[in-house]
Image 1: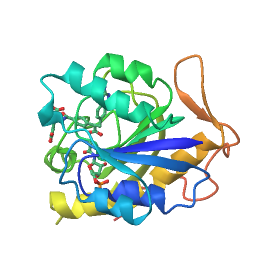
Image 2: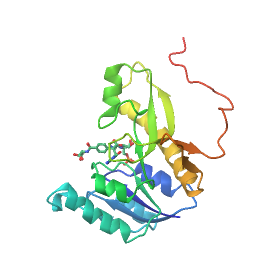
Image 3: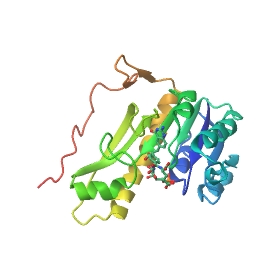
Image 4: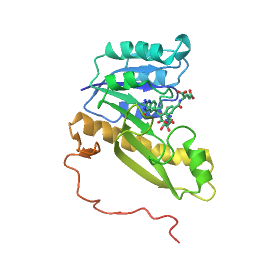
Length: 213
Ligand code: NHR
Ligand code: GAR
């Protein structure tokens, strides 16, 4: 199993993938931003890096063509978006159909898009979280692989809530990539993703209820 990771910034989800001991060869980390701090982290793990800078391409079609050319040099079985901040064109998404994952900082289908933590606070939800999903042309709408929920606390700021969610992102993204690498993810007739060999129901902690009085 070969994988390529796409980042735009800090790269903490990338780092979680690189350090999870997965049965995966991370062939490259590619950033759309030359100054992404995650590039140095990748190099520190001995992973080759590349930059395909969106500001150097005239439109999304041509940017995505350049990005695909760089990805395909590494012949990946899986492409992982890890804090990658550019919407991808339908043609690009089709090229990696059923082999491109994203980690999104919300319990999809709630709060797709950007600024999810501030929007969750404004909406007054009591539970928030993160989702790993397959990437489809419609942004943040692809089949969900795994989610983790966290409580929203009364004194939360977007930053505090983001940190609580991020800790769970670092748990579920490696899980999802492991399942993919093990060939345990399949599609049902409705286009939902199923995990082969999953427990029929949670062993304990069947629900997170918050607030809990
Ligand atoms: N592309 C497609 N086609 N489908 C998805 O599901 C995608 C995708 C590209 C990125 C990640 C996503 C997220 O987890 C993702 C999923 C960026 C934007 C965005 O609006 C939206 C969703 C996501 C990532 N980006 C702005 C744009 O104009 C730029 C913002 C910036 O540069 O800071 O592309 O949330
Ligand atoms: C993460 O919280 C990720 O879920 C989110 O940005 C952060 C990136 O952190 N992704 C998006 O919002 C995509 N639009 P990282 O670079 O440290 O992984």
